[in-house]
Length: 254
Image 1 (cartoon, rainbow, N blue to C red):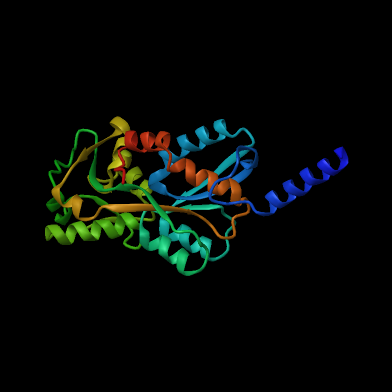
Image 2: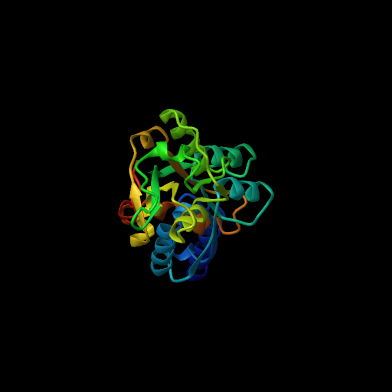
C-alpha cells in the first residue's frame, strides 16, 4: 500500500509539472536567470524592482537590457534571447506581437509624459516649447523613431512649433546626458527622467504634454528561456509594491 501511494504521488507530481501555468509560477519554480528587455526610461524603477524581486526569490537573477523600445523590439524579432519585454509605447510592443513573439495579451502597467529638462539654473532662460524653435539655442531631442521622439513630434504639432534640434539621440537617457553635462540649453525627456536626475537638472512643465501620454505595456516572450520566472516577474511588476515604486518615480498609474 505504501509503495502504491508513493507511485501515485510521483505520477501526480509529473502531471503537475507537465501542466505548468505560465501566468503564475509557484515560489519553488521562480529560479534561474530572467532577461528583461526594457525601455531606457524604466532604468531606475526597474533596477530597484529587480533587486526586490531577487530578494523575494533568492534563486532568481534578473538581468536587464535597457534601450530604445524600437531597437529592443527589433532585437526580439531577430531572435535575441530574452524572457520579458517592457516597451515605452504600444507601437513597438505591437511589432513584437505581430511577429508572433508574444502570445499573451500585453498589459499597460504605467504611463509617462514629456517634460522640458534644462541644466541647473536654466542658463538658456527656457520658458516653454516655443523656445525649441529658436536656432540660437542648443537643443536635444530623441530620434523620431523612438517613443520619446514620437511623443515630442506630437506635442510640437499641438503647440504649432517647428523644433530646431542640434542633436537627436538614440534614447531618452542619451538626451538627458546632454542636459546634465550642460551641452544643451534644453531637451525634451520624460518627467520620470527629470526626477531621476535629481538636482543636476530642472524640469519645466508645459500644457501640451497631456497630448502625448505614453502607455507602457509589458509581456513575457513566447520563446522565453525561463517562462515560469518571466511570468512571475511580469506579475510582480503589476503588484501594489511595484506600483508604489513607479508612483515615487513620477509615473502615472493606469
